[in-house]
Amino acid sequence: MRVYNFAAGPSTLPLPVLEQAQKELLDFNGTGMSIIEMSHRGKPFMAVNAEAQALLRELMNIPENYSVLFVQGGASQQFAAVPLNLLKNGKADYILTGNFASKAYEEGLKYGDMAIAASSKEDKYTYIPDMDKVTFREGIDYVHTTYNNTIFGTRYTSLPKTDATIVSDMSSCILSEEVDVSKFGLIYAGAQKNIAPAGLTIVIVRKDLIGNASPICPTMLNYAIQDKNDSLYNTPPCFPIYMSLLVFRWLKELGGVKAMQKINEEKAALLYDFIDNSSFYTNKVAVKDRSIMNVPFVSPSEELDAKFVAEATKAGLVSLKGHRVTGGMRASIYNAMPIEGVKALIDFMKKFELENK
Ligand SMILES: *Cc1c(COP(=O)(O)O)cnc(C)c1O
Image (cartoon, rainbow, N blue to C red; front, side, top):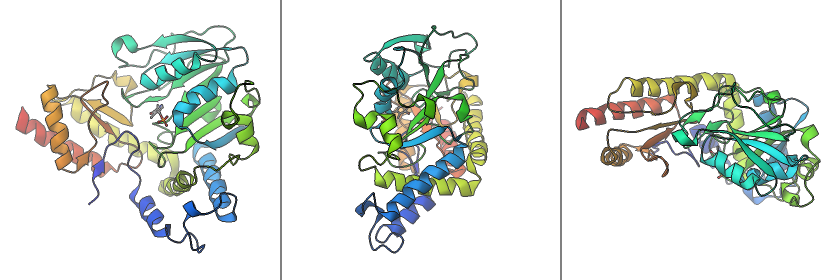
């Protein structure tokens, strides 16, 4: 039996996509083998790779002057790849809105003069700093942002006010809402939250930012080399790329990102409204900055939190335990989580509250 899986990543995938992958696993398109057993330079895989790239461009409305790279190493690898490729003046500013933002900053420190432009750490990352008030140093090569904060459940609703290049880690929100790609110099995302199995990392980078890599930049992290080789410099993560293609087709059929955003906002509103109207559950995030992908919440005590997670699991609502740094619960309600899953969670929350008040 399939459960409702609220895991933060790797996370739930659309059922029709899993079914198609299952169906094609023994024989992909009449080749007599699966997509993961064949050369990445053969026609069938090259077609998958090209269609996945083209569909991502279409879904995100990515302008012509941007390259789309399919690389490996996860979002964490981009914490290093970004400074190694983008630093020209040797300095960049970071906005710290959570654990991953801090990790990106720490990694950046190895390669340049990095500064913290703003941080919500003092308040346990429960909000996004006010973009109208954050200022940046002169001559920086980029501002680094983490668009959706997976662990703390916050998200940007406006961008830094700066002429500098804006870089954004969109690992946990890519394709969940419409974004104007032209406002960013670079967007990166690990695929395992909102797109595909782990192993694929997406980099969307404005072409004029490519070609300035530091001499110590490893070949595999060099955007110019990946771009020139159409991300096929070496063996790519074939299976996650294929799964991405299936997910992109699924998303397009559903009406694209605009339609998905509407569903996501509806799902999030159901859950937040329920929490806000309850005297039992609390979400500590500033209302204006609430994520529509990751919803952390707590019950009145740690004991009840543990009981909640255990009983929810028995009821087929799994992976609701919050991240170890926050405790409590977290419901990750990515694109592939149907609204029925959110309704089932709310029903369970009601029942649990009645039994444990
Ligand atoms: C999960 C996550 C990461 C880490 O991704 P990996 O692919 O595991 O390196 C980085 N940033 C954000 C926002 C994330 O949600």
